[in-house]
Image 1 (cartoon, rainbow, N blue to C red):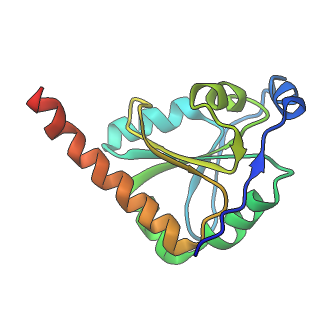
Image 2: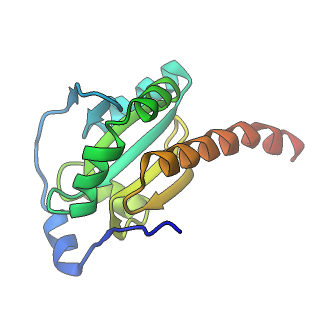
Image 3: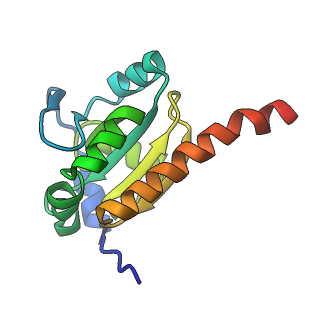
Length: 157
């Protein structure tokens, strides 16, 4: 049985999240998943040009499960290989910059929230809380599978 740990967003957190921060976007090099930091527009443009899905990690700096998933899951070599090949990966602080806007857009109420979208930002699959590497890979494979099924469903309509 998998126990998922997450941090709920309180109304006080949401108020804090509404404050804007002009932090420059940057790509952080690390073992495992390579993330674009806080630049949603860049992630979407890159995904469209590379014909990839977007993997979004919405986190809070104070969230324990967020720190755990960054330290243990996102640094896993198999996870990094799969995600870097199949997704444009973006890490978003839910409390500043574009974070509050995306939290509202995707109805985020817990940290970490992990979302896969297509290149236009349309959600494909989402989950919340800490996931070990094998569960994150299952989640990612399901997102890829669902995205591959979408065009055939649309063409039938």
